[in-house]
Image: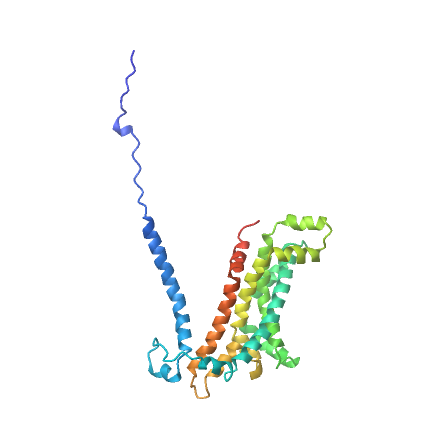
Length: 298
């Protein structure tokens, strides 16, 4: 008896898989690069136009096309904005309102997030819900009652209304975000610290706060931009021209009859934008680490 190898019938053979059509790699790279280039153009063009406009004269703004280059590249608009336009005073006031508010938001918000997420006590979930409700309250609803309270307590005419209001408005979101970041910190670290004799305050300042320092930078930058660019709260509580912040001070570049000093105005806006941009470039790596810190439980 001999074994013979015969081919199976064609209908019993498995049908060949259809060839997958793959997009060539260079086409995808080209598409990606074009999208990135388009995004860069969209982001950079307004900033470039802003800086170019800060060097133009009033006549060039009125008579020349919007995209024309300035005839001279001197800094007289910046000098006028800094001295005559009182931008230096407005920047100082913004710093006096932003720095204390930011410090209070970070310290109180981080401590509250630690207490709500790491510490075990009855009612902490209900307290966290109260902070979440605070996120949903529009700032416009609290301005008039706060203005009345500040006037009756004699705080009007100082920087305290701005500091207190910015702290109260910024705390709910900060507490919620810091509680989320503390959730990603391993509990074994705090348990080991407790076994070594560390109290809760020591565990917070020496272990918990350094563990979420990148998240603190992220939250601090978010709150900084909110406070620095705020117009509504600052315009409501700064009745004295010497207390106006940079955003309110920009309104002074429009005259009594609607005439706007475009050159100094764009120079003042450039000072404001470039300052914030430099701050972001200095700490952007910590911000990226902070944004991804709460995504993975370590």
